[in-house]
Image 1 (cartoon, helix red, strand yellow):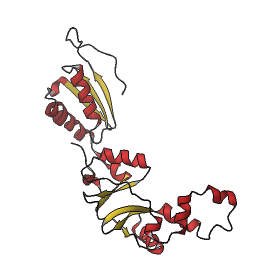
Image 2: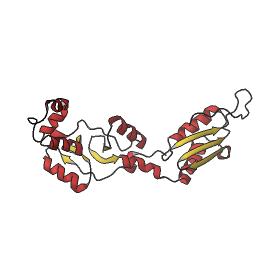
Image 3: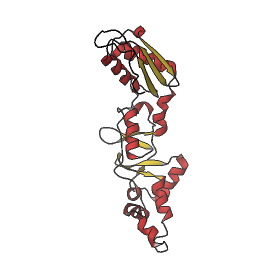
Length: 228
């Protein structure tokens, strides 16, 4: 069973309105020991303010007059606009990368990587804030024990999804690394099992050591191991 965002997200969430002033945001970051929070407008997520956004303003608060021309030129226009901002609406990164509660943790990880962010606001169908998921929350799925992972592979995948006799395939799990051995009824079934196991929460890697049947003879023969 795939772990969804709602299974690991954090609630309630520290957030601010779009008109929140700089000092209020700085205090909220410090008091709640967070590094970013969503910006809301009538309950809907319209952006995210991070400590980096606040630091941009702090670093450039004195203006540009005394700064070397080369350094000023290197500052992106967006950063300059943020440096002049005084509210969450001015300083936030918008639009925010968000995710819904029913999406998988795997999807959240891909979205974080694509957008180069450490956390994602979780929103409902109307765009309203439902929670927040961080990198730490995503990595929490790897806390599953080897025994639990092995039981899911054997019961839910091999037997439950593919109706294959669990005795035909040996499953070994060590530190989240799964090794599959034995003889599946066909190469297609074996590879489908391997692919499904790769997506089980807590699985770090899969080693395919299955003996695929020869298409000509139907007998199990040792083939070249696919890349892990």
